[in-house]
Length: 635
View (cartoon, rainbow, N blue to C red):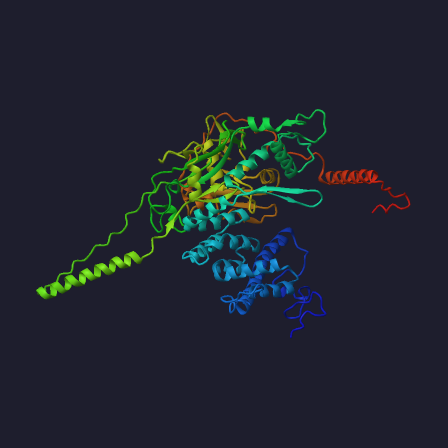
């Protein structure tokens, strides 16, 4: 019986050497923390890869426990506390974690070992962050035991090894894309069952709080969120509530038909009382952006055919001839009035719901020619050959009947802010009476306009839509903000006085950024760049350089990887001259926004308000404040 760890709290369980006592040089770690900024960043990047390796070892040990303790029993173990639960209990006890945490660790280890071995290798090699593993495991649970299980594992691993950065949303979209395309029928059945299970619920929380929630289709959830966010924005900059608190109050005002207002308390505030019903009734229609290939609207096709570009490997562009740069736009709207979104340049543009697509001309499939067998035989041999041919025909018919139906491959769609949806879901949205389908382009090689007429600074509606569909999220490494909720940033600063000097409004010159990262890039010392990929025409390479000079690649997975037709769309050169409107104020290209007060002063003000509220509450409850001699020292 092992007594390892007993009597030595925190002692290492293997080797008997606590981690702080180990030689940093033997682990490849810096011996000192007295490093320059770049040295610290290099160490953090190296430690991130090391954390992946340690997590890989942790899962390997957990999987080994499963092999030894669970596998021999799992086929016939019907106990309430079965071998799996007991194995997890051992882990929970050894690590002092809950049974739930231990079982999830064991689940992840088994899934990586059996279902995702190549992704498991990516974790070992430091290619994927441990924080993404749970996302990958949970989003691929449905492929277990399917014939395409190894393909999905290989495709995800290949995508993760591509140069570039990842975020939780991009990893989630990658996994959903692989699964949805290879299992369209099962995905549709699961969605139908999920719709049947939609519900409304309330929960009582702590401190007099409660939770209200509802499950519904993704597009309806997006519409509800937009309506609430629109009302919550009807306040001035002096409102003291957080964004989430304002949204909570706005939702109640919409349901109760109650007024909603700013809480700043300033007499001159124009948002003191806002009619929620009036805002909802007069607001522009809600538009849900959905991006999809044209071929997705026609339904699933057999796998490994050129009739559907998405039937190819996930990270391989279709090689079939292209009939022209055409994409489809589908509007899913709520409300009667026209609406739009405002881009960086302040242009109101009609918003589209589904954008994407490519027309592909199928390659000619090779034709196998039957060879005629010439033989000279007597009449008996001819009769025998005829009998054998009949039997062979019957056998072939039986084999054909027993042969499984060809695997179907379906396209996918992308809903801004929600992620990947199945091709069947896209077609359901397209069949909605309020849906509007428009091609992004005319199906020819004619370049689309890049800017608005007579103003080379402002992008055209087509270019605005294209960039948001291409980037999908803020392009800053690790950011999950949807592109449709952010700005379009000129990568090279636009020269309003001499537009011909650089900073053109073009597909390569613009990128999506959330407002924070747009401000960070514009007013900080960070430098970003993007340029055409010489190895993949139509695609671009992004880099981000911190002030100390370290460069990080941009997103590894973008709209190009989901909808290859996007890289076939081309735009014309913007005019070199024309009206040059100054940027709006305040914007990232204008005067830098300021805080109402320094961060420290705001923090101290919040603390003073909290103390005042505590004093008032204590006075109402009859609690005497401390006397001078009883007061704590001022530190």
